[in-house]
Image (cartoon, rainbow, N blue to C red; front, side):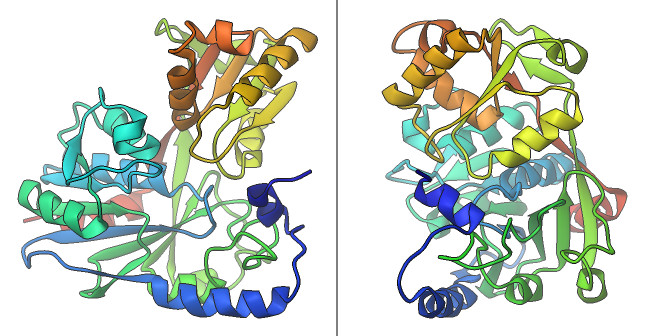
Length: 349
């Protein structure tokens, strides 16, 4: 039986008055797309929204933008959202923090940006985090906000999956996992960013978008999977290895698609709750699957690998928890030249 997340993603959720609920969702989300936030006049803000309820690539895009701004010399802070964590005050996230303190995506961002000069900041509210970030930096990248009000963001980016920009069904809940109506999402952004391979502009999903908004590309890069020892297993080796994929995120089919394109085909795909944790039941299923499918390695995204490591820390190495070692997929986005140019304008004093 599909869970709620999967039912929304596949458009299989059946509830009474679904048409009425869809209308209510659109009304609420149209208003929520513009978040009431404020910051000092000298600060520039890049808002990063996603088209679907998870799985659009907005956090990797936020990380890539923060890294590029820092590389250009701008004092930069990424404002995260501390999913499933409860920070009592605004704080800077470090690579040594725990998931419970700062949330998985903020911790992934802090580790990815370590050494770049960009800081990651979370707080009990988004405004509290922005207040601290504005004292630390001149350009803020706000993850998970499509647009701001009453002050409009300096640059608003909408992250979409290049193949399925509006989800599998292109529908609002409960008929799909689209965050807001497609027209409303495009209206509030400055640039639609396709995450992955270059999209087909003639496809039904992309037809007409470029006439309304600039479209940019953020290409996924990575040399393979990194083991706990630090060893890199390259794509060529992964293609020859009996693999499984374990996830704690939305739309894991995107990850499977990306792996398959690189020749790495998981024999088993296990899905846990979005943003974790890796439950005891999921660990038992993984251990059994590793034995039955003769898996030599589990793969996980950087976010999912945090949950695996956290759960494994209670019992020992990941092998003891999952029945096979676990490698974290290298995953970073390479911004296209037009998008980098937009960020360069904000980095210029």
